[in-house]
Length: 169
Image 1 (cartoon, helix red, strand yellow):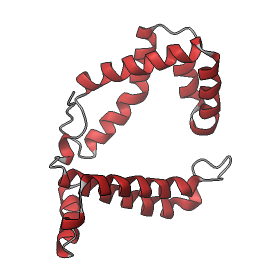
Image 2 (image 1 turned 90 degrees about the horizontal axis):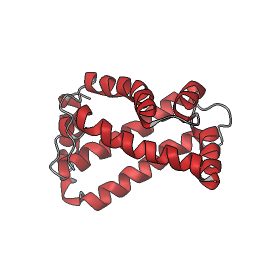
Image 3 (image 1 turned 90 degrees about the vertical axis):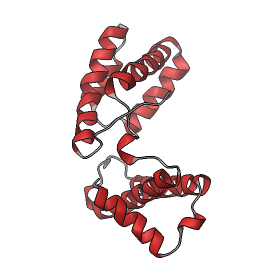
C-alpha cells in the first residue's frame, strides 16, 4: 500500500468531517463488521475455497477492511509502516506459541479432533498441512518448516511497502 493511498483515504475522511466520529472502539467494530462481510463471500462455498468468480466482491470487501484499518492506525497515532514486527523478534515468539499448540494438538484427542475439523474446512494447502502438522516433529524441525512457510509471506509484505517491521512487547 502506498503513502498516496493512505493519504487519499484520510483526505476522503477529512473532506467529510468524519474524523470527529472515529474512535478506536467504533473503528474496531467497523473492521470486524467489514471482515465479516468479506467472510460472507465464502460462506457456503463448499469445495470452491478460492471463489474466483467472486473476486470483485472480495476486492470490494477487502478495500473496506483496509480503509478502516488505515483510519484505525491514524486514530491511534500508528504509522502503517511500523505495524509489522521485525522478523528476528517476531518469528521466535510466533514459533514458540505455534509449537505449543502443535504439541497440545497431539497430546489431547479433543484438541486434535477440533484441529482436524478446522483444517479440513480452512487449511487449503495439503502440502503445508503435511509439512507442519505431521506427528513427532521436534521443536527445531517444526520451527524450520514454519519458517519455510511464513518467511515468503513476510518478504512479500515488505516488498509491498511494509518496510519497517517492528514488534512491541
